[in-house]
Length: 116
Image (cartoon, rainbow, N blue to C red; front, side, top):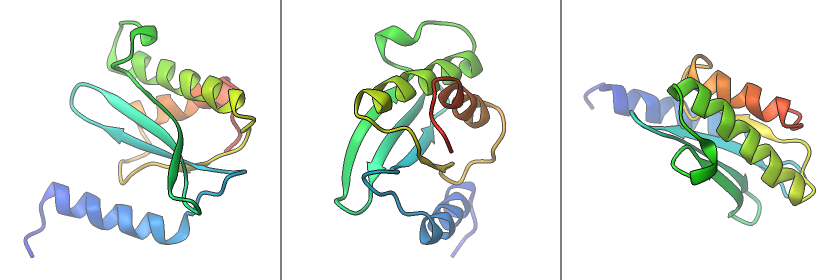
């Protein structure tokens, strides 16, 4: 199998997911980023359902750099989590390096009140 950027990230994702499982009390905060946007979801892996989601394409996020938008998405997902009485999550970086937009999203979620 040819090692491309996409397949390498997929292998990293599978390796991370072997160890990380979200529960209803402590769901998995999953991150996906594209070239233009960033998305995150709170996932309960026991039931296989998404509890809350947020993205930089929503109206309330605002404009600015992609890093600033990521921080705003982190705060937005923290608000939505607290509305569902969730205060702690397991962070799933989705195969991306913990740097730049992924780090900004995590820091925004921490500022919003989520514990990792």
